Image (cartoon, rainbow, N blue to C red; front, side):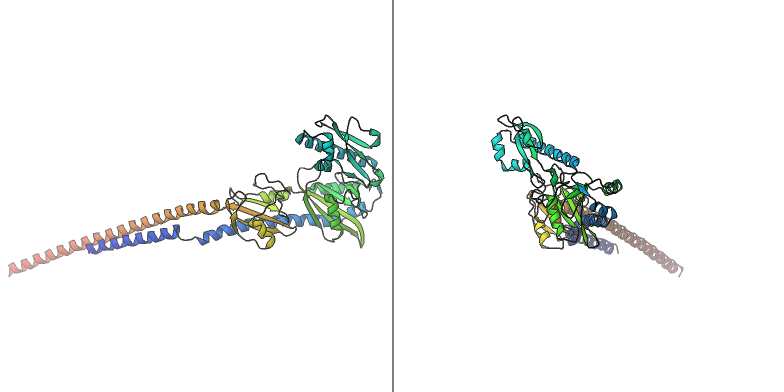
Length: 446
């Protein structure tokens, strides 16, 4: 029996080692499809949740535009009397000249070797300086020390000199009759608009009358009083959005774009306003891209190397990204991710090289309320190699512990069998000797 117990233990040990080898093979060398699927599904889920939140943002903003378009306050303001509003228009023109002057200083700071005549011929510089005002007015670059101030209505020094020592300035000719704004709008109505803007956290609220005049803004901007049908304005963002909204009964989303003197991208939400079937004008909500950018760039669920960002229908970057040196509305992003996003509607997983040449796993989601795409990418090494190594180490630790426990159990079991066998053998020998003794006694008695 002792030999049988030893044989049993040897067979048990060999069996355990065979099981261990098989377990290690499965853990280390077998393809772990479940793990891969979990990683892919997690990435898809993370991006889809972001996409839903961004879509919700647009739905909320569109709802706000519709609520305002149907409000009594907006309808009364759009039907109010309009006038020239000379004081406000002059203030806006002077602000425009200040902005242009600062941009002149920035441009000359970048190109200090250009002369006055070279600046006059530079196309990019002239786009900064020459702007339309009203239907016939405009701004002009001037030599601030020598130009005839009597020929212009407004002027401002740029406080910067060219390479040939010309002090630059900007001047404007304007016909104030070409501007119209609300004439003394009721304070209770304007206060209501201001409260709505503050509570909903918009940059600005704008009213456009049926003729195309921007007759009211909560925060007076350069568009106030202008007619968006004039050539000077119909190519500007608000003008383009206005013409797009004219052909639609639904809320129009325009942008994002970078306004003059602005440092962050903005969006416009435009809704038409009606009194029955009579067209009263439009309400425009101006909002920053900050809320969208925050959602897009959240790192939760994307690890250390993960990056998510939004591109527009032309594949231009419109939110912040980890891509080094990428400029919003300028950097075009062409990857397997962005190509698929505009070709397919259901988010899928892609494996490709990113702009740095790193191997990444990516997916995407369409922003249904606008023609945008939210894409996300994360290093393959982070989501696969490192976690799998950790999983393998964990599996090996469990395998070793369980099999050590089995070996200990087998050893104890075999040892008990051996002890029991020894005890039984001893008892048998005692009984045999006892029987032999009894037999001898009987023989002697006979």
